[in-house]
Length: 541
Image (cartoon, rainbow, N blue to C red; front, side, top):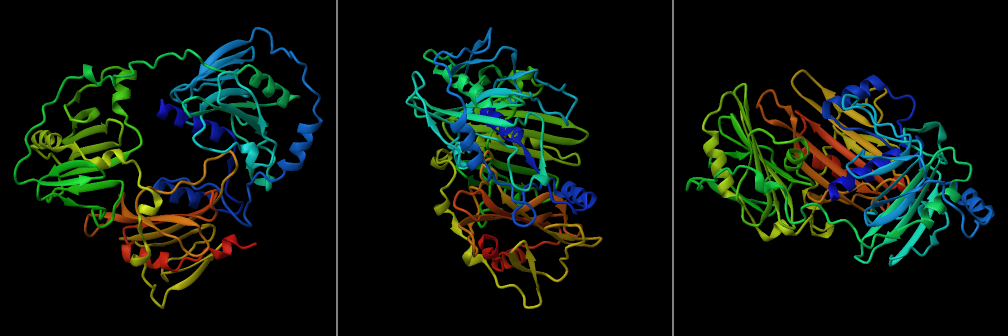
C-alpha cells in the first residue's frame, strides 16, 4: 500500500504542472547528454525562471472572502456515489469514474487511460478526486498564503483544508500545462485516530465555482468506521513459491555487513565501485577477479518480483528460500545466451529491503553453487531495522575536501561560484554543464538549480554519504560512487560518479544538485571541486 500510495502521490504532483528549461538551450545537445547518464533536469532558480506560487495571496483571499455563502443543505450532484479510500468515506460527483494510474484509485470525469503500448501518455482526467497519505507535506494553499479552514469531519481527530490555483505563477512564459493539470486544486487533510494523516485532493478544470464544488466534497467526508481488512495481512504471498535450498558458506569466503545485511562472497571477489567501508553508499559491487561474475548489493525502497508474481501470474524460475527474520526472501533465476542472472530480494520484518544480484558473463560456470552459498550467508543485524541514518549521524565531508590546483579556472553559474579544471568547458547552449571529451575518456559536471513549487515535494537529501554544507547553504550531502554505464577503456572499470545535493533554504524547496562523472573523472578532483563551491550569491537578495 505504501509503494502504491507513493506512486499516486507522485502522479498527483506531476499532474499539477511542470517547469521547462529556459529558452536558448540547445535541445539536441541537452538530449545527447541526458541519454548519456539518463537523468532529467527540470526546475531552475534565479534570472532564468522563478516558479513559485507568489500571486495567490491577495487574489486568492479576495476570492475566498467574497464568495456567496453556501446554503445549509447544499445538495451534491444527482446520483452521487459513495467511495472509500485510505481510511476515508466520501462522495464523488455523478459521472466520475474510477481509474488506477498508480495502484490506488482515483475518480475523474471522462478519464483517459492509455493502453500498455503508449509510453508517452499518462492516465489522467480533466477533473479528479483522490486520497493518499499526506507524507508530512504542508498544504500547498497554506504555503501559497491562502486561508486554511478547520473543519469537523466525523470520526477524525482534526481536519483542515486549503486550496491553490496552479496556473498563477510568476514567469508564466515558462509554464507548461500538462494532462490532468486543473486550474483549481483543493486539499483536505484528515488526521485519523492512528495519528496518520490522509489528504483528499480535488483538481478541477473549467468549473465556474470551484471552491464551492470542493466544499461540497468536504461536507461528504467521514472517517471509515469499518475499513476493509487488507488482503492477507499476515502473508506476503511467498508461501506458495517453490523453495530453493541455501548451502553452507565455504570457509574460504569472506563475510561482511552491508547496512544491516550480513553476507559472504568468495575471497577473490573485490569491491569494484569504490563504495566499500571507506565510502558508505546504498550500493556495493563485488567483482570476481577474472571479471566474469559480480555480486551487487543494494538498499532499496521497494521490492518488485513478489508483487509482479502475484499480479501477473507465476514467474518462471522464481523461488523462495528460508531466511530468519525476513518476511520476503525470493530468488528469480534467468539464464540465456551464456549469461547468468539471479535476482535476490529480501526484506527484514519491519525493517529494510535489499537486493542481492548475482550476475555471470561470457559463459561463466558454477554460479548455481555460488548462489546457494550466497543465500546461505545472508542474515540481518540490528542495523536492518534502523532505517535511514539521521542527517547529523553522517560523517562530515570537510576532512575530505582538498584545495583545488592553482591553475584551475573560476566559473560562475546563476550566482554559484566554483573553480574547475581548465579542460572542463561549457559549450555554447549547454546551460549548467561543463565537459571535456576525448576518444578515450570524458568528464562532465552538471548543475541543476531548484525552486520547488508549493505542491511538489522538497528536494530530498541522500540518506548516505557525507554531510556537506558549503557557504550559502543550510545542509547537504555529497556521495562518492561509480557509474556502471560508463567504463574506462584502459582498465575496464566503471567510471567515477560523484553527486551533491545542498539545500539553500531550511525547507529544502530551494536547492542545488551537482553531478560529476565520466571515465576520466576522479575522486580527488571531485573533492577539490566541492571545496571551491560558494553558494552565497544564490541566496542574497
